Length: 366
Image (cartoon, rainbow, N blue to C red; front, side, top):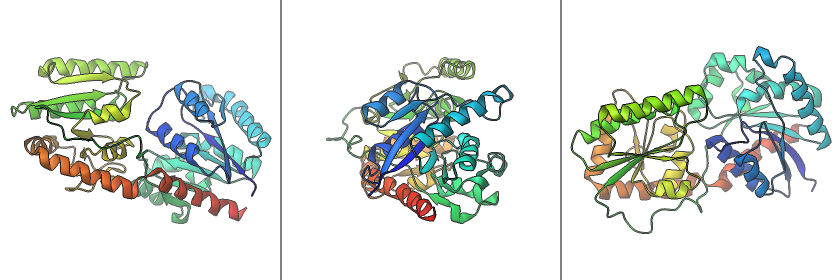
């Protein structure tokens, strides 16, 4: 059987976020008897090095933002380089792990006459769907039913859309070997310190919980990128800690490269922005509280493995945290059910097989 080369466009090569983790799970576990992956990263760094160490062929090629005026000339040069790379490697299919690279796929699809796949990891608006011309994609993979809705609203043929939930390495994220007997209950939030992750809202929730006199510690896991916007937000987060007098209750862990251990230090995960961390926490046997955004409501079994609670008013989330603090046995049982759910539905093998099914469907047409 001939191995079909698949070219991947990664959002980032210099850092590892949720999207990069999911791409790594895919390319590291894809059937190498049938497919030959090659990943293009726009910059070098920890993610590109991770891929190389995993024996995944990786190329560094700057891909400037297509729609920005300053990229008017450089984008066409970059597109030509990607096309030439695809030709050299005889790519049979191109898969972008970030839909903002869709314009590059238009160009490559037109020149190479091969199918292109766009992965939707964010909740888009119908306007964004039209702006990034998802109608020109041969296939679209959405990480949740909710994220597929704007695609359909924008007129995308439902036959082009496949929903494939995020996955998790069940061997790396393990439940605790024994129950936590600590007097403190630890609640954490995971992600870059940035407005989208809502660490400021997390602190407001923490203030509500602590005001009830509960022995709770809050972990903010992650760091800010070296951008003016993110550094400004980080300062606002620190100012909020001081304003609410939370210094002894809130622990900033910084960027963690040992996420299984970081999550194991928690009793409960709170996420206000969805993401693959939900699957990681469930695999680690931790209950999860999230808001009805993205894939959250489809990954958390409300009342069984955690809770899906509206963000506004924040008292709703604070009340659920307090319920679990008061009843640690219930919290533990929810975590155990979360692990079983992860084993049944969120394993890497199932995820990879669903993506390979998309590939086969497209390649058979060719």
